[in-house]
Amino acid sequence: MIIRALLVDDELSAIRWMLDLFRLEPSIQVIGKATNFRQAEKRIAEGPIDVVFLDIQLRRHNGLDLLDRLDKNTRVVLVTAHEEYALRGFELGVIDYLLKPVFSDRLAVTVERLHQSLGDTTPPPKNESSTTLSISTAESMVLIETDEILWIESENNNTWIHIARRMPVMLRRTLNEWENTLSERQFGRIGRSLIINLSRVQSMTLTVPYVWELKFNNTKETLKIGSAAARGLQKIVSQIPHPLS
Image (cartoon, rainbow, N blue to C red; front, top):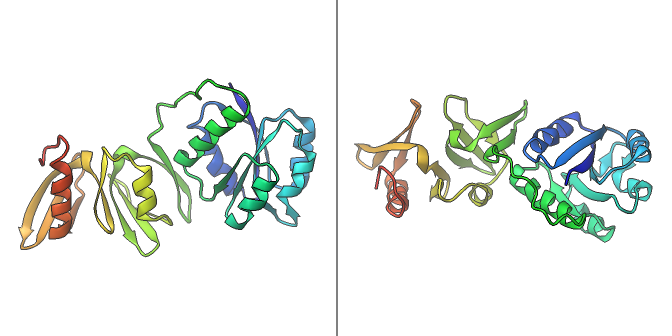
C-alpha cells in the first residue's frame, strides 16, 4: 500500500530533511509540500491525502488549526521541536508524534503505525539502504552509511561521529540514543563516552603504558583508548567472532 503524504513545515530545511528520510521509506509518496498555513489549506482542499506530517508552529498560525480542514480519513503525524504539544496532539487524535530532529529508525515505527491505522496488514516494503542514517548539522544534512562510522564519542550533550575518509560530524544526540539505534552485533559501547564499530576494528596495540591504539579497516584513522576502554572492547569481542578475539 502506498501512503500519500503532505508535508507542512515553515522551515524548508525541515522539509528537505523529511524528504531525504522518506527516500528510505518506499511506501510513502510525498504528494505535496507547504510552508505556511494558506498553502496547506489549499493543498488539503485539493485532496486526497492519507497523512499530513504537520509542524505545529507555522509562523502566525498554529498547525493544529488545520485539523478541522482535514477529511476524517486523513491521519496526522506531528513533527515538531516542542514536546509539550504531544499530549494535546494525542487528545485531538493524531497517529504519532515525532520530535525533531527525526531519525530513520523512529520514522520507520511511524510508517508501520500508519499502515496499521489505514487497515493495511501487509508489512511495508523494506529498503535495502535501511542502514543509512540522515544526519543534520548546523550547515547541512548528510546521509551516512552505518558501515562507514568508525566510532562515536560523547561531549557534554552532544556526540561526535567519526566517519571513514570524512570529517567528524557533531550531533545533538546522547550516546544512549545511539546505543538504542545501532545494531548491537556491529557496534559496542566500551565506556561511558565511546561506541566502537566492531566490524571496522583491525587491530589493537599497546603503544605506551595504559594507552592502546585502535586501527580500522580501509582507513588511516586511528583511535587511542585507555585501559578501561580496552578491557571493555576485549570483553565484547570475546563473545563474538572477530579478529581481535
